Length: 261
View 1: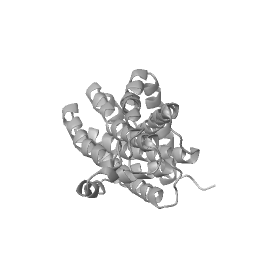
View 2 (view 1 turned 135 degrees about the horizontal axis):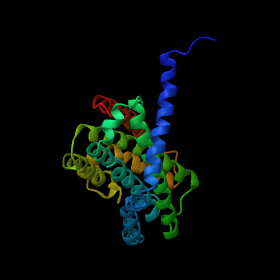
View 3 (view 1 turned 45 degrees about the vertical axis):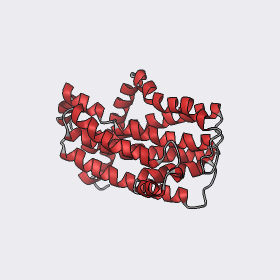
View 4 (view 1 turned 60 degrees about the vertical axis):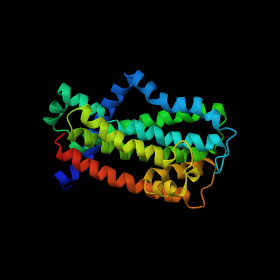
């Protein structure tokens, strides 16, 4: 039997280390139930306090108001939750946790992937709760469409959490981190049409919004929620989400490793 080389051991080591890091941060998250609740609070408030206002408003798209609002809130949940995931590393840097991790033999890639997978799982659980509450208010969507929406949400969390952790490793304080994230998130939310379809916007604003990749994700999830999988909207959204995830994870991994986590 040929000996196992270092190169052959590397993938299995990364997987093993990722599982260890994922388990550590998942246990940490489960002990912080308040953070889980408040992470879901904002989209639930939009759902409960804003959703009923749209029930009799013509939104110019397919499906009813809940099939328009809930997919947008899923993307909004990803934009806010995953994009601010890096705050955890800022706390760890201040308390010396990152310094202690630097002297361990744990794979640097696993230190990123374990955290990101925790964020994806948490966001999917929050998304499920959001859909269940939306169903209680009147949302009716095909099960395959809901599953497609969860897949898009997971890809979005993978992308944004990777970039968020990389950014957190490059700055030292929340005062540096938060303005950068807000500067990206605010126009992304406004131009992706998470609350109202961009088809309602004037032509110039609709054209600008097409430069924002999250718009295609929102449109794809809305199409899936009305069971329309064949007009290319879902396929285009999937291509954009996959490309965004590939670029973000690659860039996030590179920056995270260079920062020496």
